[in-house]
Length: 325
Image (cartoon, rainbow, N blue to C red):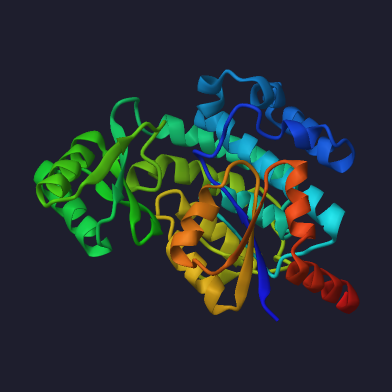
């Protein structure tokens, strides 16, 4: 029997209105949104539901908003269907939602930690000093080479930050070096390489100050061994032990997100059904490039549960899970 993975999106998926329909469900789902307001100590949910979009996009707001919505979507799914994952994974900040979903720490701690993570990332590099760019339809080795050359020529940082798919790699570093990498890529025939509008150059060595902030915060946070394995961003491999999770979350701040490796590892482990929980369908789109025949569902609003309930194979697994529980 195939296995199920729950996936949680990262920054960029946020949008005004996120979570509003879920919050209207009441009960334990609505309680998560109330909890978020208490943890961040300002009306985050009003910002999520009403905007303005510019303020929602601030990294210290987007990160807790995405974690809250992801956990709310998962709560609604599990309460409605009883479905449980065999594995979890989250893209960048989504890893915190995935760990909370697997029992590693509380929802309150997940929200608190990513709020701090967002603040520390924004403060790590002065505005205008860092940049990121999406390198589309370039071989991995070619992207890595232009990063090395750009860093060497400028004396600045430029590294791959997100290995999303074989056709989409995001680079990060000092603005001068990233701009040079774009010039080198275009000179070599790359057709779709574009600078991204971001709050900071995530997942590169420039984030070292933020990593130290998170190291202290995670050292003071109670973390438990996971009920089901997490496929870690840093390694693309499964992990369950609390001590290792703590170390990987610190390393994750400056290390690249190995999302393609993570999805390929889930396929190797027998996962054939993926459920994206939270805002948007970014991860589903990337997954279709990696595994076109995978069964993919998303839970963004309450009505999305209907398509899952109509999936006879998935509902059969739910029944099997209940029988063996």
